[in-house]
Image (tube, rainbow, N blue to C red; front, top):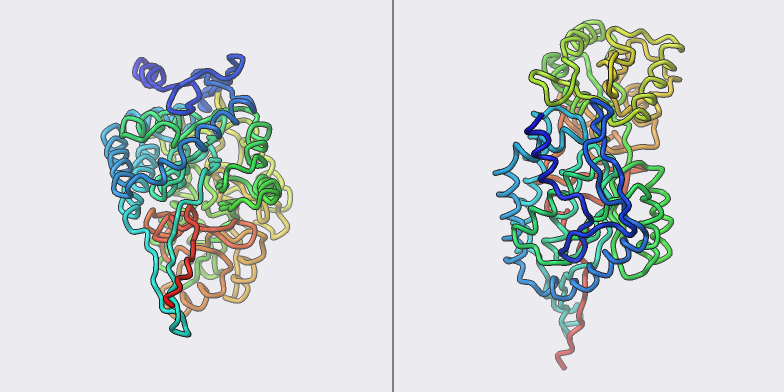
Length: 486
């Protein structure tokens, strides 16, 4: 426990505005809770709307000079941040586990993933291209340049408290944009620590400003409607995303939204079942199921359903549940009581409609917000968890007969973030991939996230892409200059 206290005490707990750590207006604070015990870890500053506006003032003031900073210099700051995160991965992972709950090994995986966004965009900073073109009539020339969009507002969720911030900060820094970022109130420590590391890496004052608050709407809406910020990027629920888009419309803010998911995982009879079960475990249980990419609906072709269900149940039943700091723990707690109760309600609804719990199916005993890893068989199509994002360690199994039936069920959702597909038939793989209405597909694998790939969805799952060669485009505007040669 002394190491835990040491890590928490070494983390900043104030607002980071204009390169300085400062208390919130009136000295207000909010408690950060350990979801494994329900006890308070520490208190952090609880920003007011005035604090938010001060952060935007700082971002606006720093924008011109930061945009003029050489791309190589911006990239080197990102590179040094990557190196610092890699060097201090153990400390960062423990801090994340204490505030979010996931096992330390998974937290270390997230730190490595988050750091890769800084390394990737360090390399992209010097590859911002323009264009030169002869006008079709030959009488003039077109110059095309790409410039930073300007001050950005970034809002991140609690489930990946380092990676979701890095996925936005990396391209913003590379493009030459300043930022105000608001991490989730449940998990603010990882972002506050990251701001400290980026300052150590040489990031100038005012480029990154961090505000922590329990009143997300009250603090962020004035910034969105202010008119000086020029971009809004949000990762979170579709419900909140819709509200933010409405607010952004008044100032015609450029928006990128990574919203909810309802990922289908399809297992065809010709699939390699070893790979399918391994993939399902990754797609379902990464982050304890608290991920927008989590397999929410598992559809298995009837001839292999029993075998698949048996294998998956054995794997889920063997998972060790406990506090993420304990050795050998595979599954930590859910983030809070609200989320735990939601998972319970969804499972209870499915069971009431005829689903069978092959393992789990109830809240785990003891302190903290734990729910048992669960496999549900014979889940009816009318169950709420076929439509609602579970965000927990629950794997619902539903059989299908034909390819067309599987595709129809997979697409029968307002969401369209990711699908998973397991088959050894190449023609089926291509055919089904083209028909699935999602922005990403995991073909014979259970993880799609990669800093070098474009992450994002269609339909109600969002707008824009993060990561990959297109990730920086979200933070750049195109300017065209018409040149007269006469």
